[in-house]
Structures are given as structure tokens and as C-alpha cells.
Length: 401
Image (cartoon, rainbow, N blue to C red; front, side, top):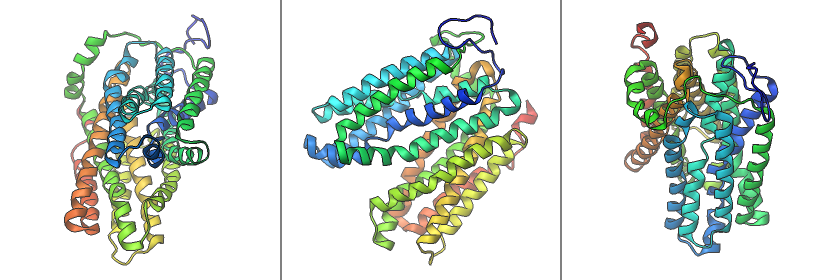
């Protein structure tokens, strides 16, 4: 522990380890805060009736949330390498609280769209929590710690839509945002009490942070490979989930509600993320990434069986979510094992590539469905997995550094 103390918990040096309460707080932070991105989706029908908005307008609002998140990743996450990290998280939680209240008070679609952009832009606390956990963790437990925080994040994504839909049905869509804002305040108070302050050893000016990004990409082959593997896995994942509702409607005569229920199978992925982190501390994360991509490929093999029924689809979803998260956590473990002074920037570069892969997978899945149907979707997802496995046949870049 660093001797200096002030308000809250004392400052902790890099690699000093995280207690169970602190690790749990970071996992809850990741899950509860990332949920802000997904509250709107189950509420679109309620919002449309209240504001008299069309589906096209509501789709634009959802897109603005995601665009805001991309902007926040680029603008705010690198600051973790320049500013005291706990304070940065608290400031962002305060900002997202105001943005959520603006959403709840919006009386028109343009106002809701602008507020939703602000929600996305300030909901980047999970991407500061992950590097912070990796920074504080002992080197021999970094994979487990990252996996645990990622598990919390995945559970938050999974349960956000369910919680929003239930609360919105009983209290109205505006109440969802008011409750979410209150949760952010409680979360900020809890983090101020249990998290240590964490300052970068060599703070970097903001302009220099952004200017250093191309050099990090150029100088870190492990980052490039891990980001590419993560993007390919998430692309395959997105291709499936984008087209699942079409499959359910055409083959099983089920709708979007059934597609949402399949998301509950994702709990296994969250559990798999934590387990993967433990293995990543003892086994090469690169090999674990290969296992994750292989499981994902197997999922598309199950999906491709022409005569599969709903139980087979459930098995495939289970394999898909597990494989993608195993690959994701293994790659994150590799990235956070690189330069400790640049963890936030490295995390941002990885996540931007990861979500770019997801966006590309969404487009590829829709195109494959339109031209070739479900078999085309399975072929597209399998091809992305095979590209990742082919990349792993190349020499390990870690051995060349």
C-alpha cells in the first residue's frame, strides 16, 4: 500500500492485489453501468406510443446510443492513463446520472436521441473498470480478475433488457431511467468507499495520449492479433444474433420475444468468462483463444444441421456464447499483460476493434440471410471462426518480442 491517504480508501500500487470486496465492486460496476446501453431496446414500443414516434425514428435513437458509446470509448477511456482512475469513474457516473435523467424527462424524439447519445458517451465506466482491475491485480491472478469483471459485465448485458422490460411494463418507460439514475448514484457512493485511488505512474497529457495511439498499434503485434481475434469472434456472434429472429419466425413461427428468451442462455457465457480467466493465469491465453474460436465454430456446425429443432438451437446458442466469451477474455488477458502504463489506451484500441468486428458481422449476417438464407448465415459465421484459427497458425508474436 502507498502510505499517502485521503478521503476514502488508501491508494494502492500496481500489482498489490484486490480483495474480494473490491473485485466484487468492480464486477458489479461493470454489469450495472453497461446496462445503461440496453435499457431502451425493450421500451421502444412504449416510447413510440408516448412520443408518437415511428419505428424508423426509434431505430435512430438506438443507433445514437451506440454511436455515443463509440465516442466515449475514444474520448474518455484513454484518460485512465492520465488521471486518477477512481475519480474518473466517479465523474463519469455523475455524468451518466444526469444523462439518464435527461432521457426520462425527454418530451420529443430529438431530445431523447440527444440524451441517449450522452448516455452512450458516458457509459464507458466498464472499460475503465477492466484496466483498473488488471492494474491492481497481482500478475499471477490477472486473468482471473479480468475474467471476473468481464463476467459481471456480461450478466449486466444479459439482465438489462429483462429488468427494463418488467419495470417499464409496470411503471412506464420514464421510470426505468429514473431508477437507473438512482442506481448510478448508489454505485458511485459504494465505489468511493471501497475502491482505492489509482494514479498512473507517469501521467500523459491528453493530446499525447491520442497521438500515441498509432504507435501502440504499430509497436504491439500482440495487440493487433488479439484485437483481430476478438473482432472475428464477435463478428460471428453478431451475425447469428442479427438473423436469429428471422429464423425463429420462418422455421418455428416464433417472434422477437422468443429471441430475447434465448439470451438467458448467455449466463453460461458469463460463467465461462470467469473460468477462462483462471485458466489464462496458467495456460497460454493464445491457446485458450483457439479453444474459444473452435467452440464457436462448433456452434455454427450445430446450427447448420438442416433438421435441428429448438433443443438443438439451444445447444448451439450455449456453445456460441461460451466460445465467444472464452475467446474474448483470453484476448483481453493478453492485452492487459502488455504495457502497464498504457492499459487504458490498449483496452480502448482492443474494444473499438472488437465492436467494429461486431458491426461488420451484423452486416455480413444480414447480407448472408438475404441471399442464401440460414445456411448462408452459418457459412458466414463459420468462415469468420476459420479466419481466426488460421491466424493462430502463424508464429506467436510474443516470441518475437
